[in-house]
Length: 474
Image: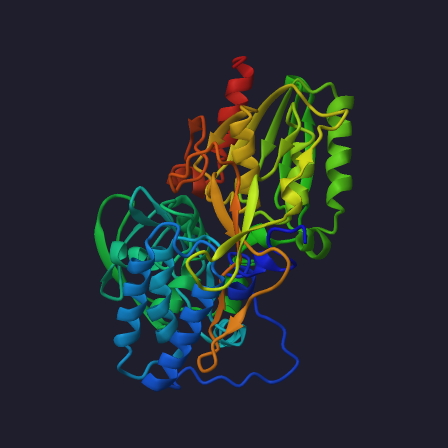
């Protein structure tokens, strides 16, 4: 029982909200789904009761950021206001309001994969890739031959709704640990069109009010496109970051005696099914090469690492830290719904881990952003606590002090009528009792965020900043 999120845990969120929500799931049987079916208030109330029971009896951090009285009030109010028929997606939009109130980054809630498959195959989506930056919704990629709204334009309204209202509606339905916003914004900046469709549907056309790059205000109606048509226009994947690639990759720059080590995930299943690498072997090999190359400075890139197995994070740290360490301090498991619902648990991650004989003890830079979540957030928290390395980028998405995770078994519940999936996780994970839980991730030593121009031109401003520091001897 030594994993943070067992098996496919990270396909059940971003990579659930990524892979499941974005790519079509292969089904051998013919899919039968009618998006117009409305469920009665009694059916919806039954689903809500199952949803609430699951949270109260399985979500470890249900009352971490709000009192039981506050959570009960929200649940009671939502239940009492179920007074009209809704489709499954309308009901999803309704109950997903609880996510940002509970504030647990592992409190997953998502539609039936049959539903997302149906929409991915048949429905229209907004044909742009959009980025929320400086409180503005900006176009950073066109996925349509219609050139009315060019890259760099600011979206002011979509189908009569203000872009700030739209984004806030989506934002409050995104998981996050505590008061962190870098993670939910990171999710939406990757998967805006999917979450937009969850709440606002799949219109055939989009009436878009926008500001051009020279400041003109214009309105245009553009056709929505299927994902297949968007891919045909682009000539490549809509999501190039999900193409086959290496999970662990090491490179050496002889001119500045600097090694660059990128670790994209700590999830065992990702290495088996996507990267086709053996994680420990790759890490071991990388640090052998670090020693062979007489590396003076190591740059560890953990950006967009969604976490995964405890032992993978431990293994990496054992090559970087300078003293024996605990990855985490303690776990507590949910033991029923009562006044003392959390009981101390046992977990592999709490053991004292020794440092490898050929560990790297030289200068270290660590690149982080809002996509550093779950076990990756733990790794960065440990690096910060042990004062190991200079952190550069943005606040991590995962909480630095306390979070939650499943240890030992799957807990997915399918609501009986709407088939919405809820997956609250059953263990509270204390990273370090000496770190105050302020509801945020680990902060960087140097806050570096890309501009819209950086995003459009694929300019890695964080990596460039590190290069500059190395060249200047900092």
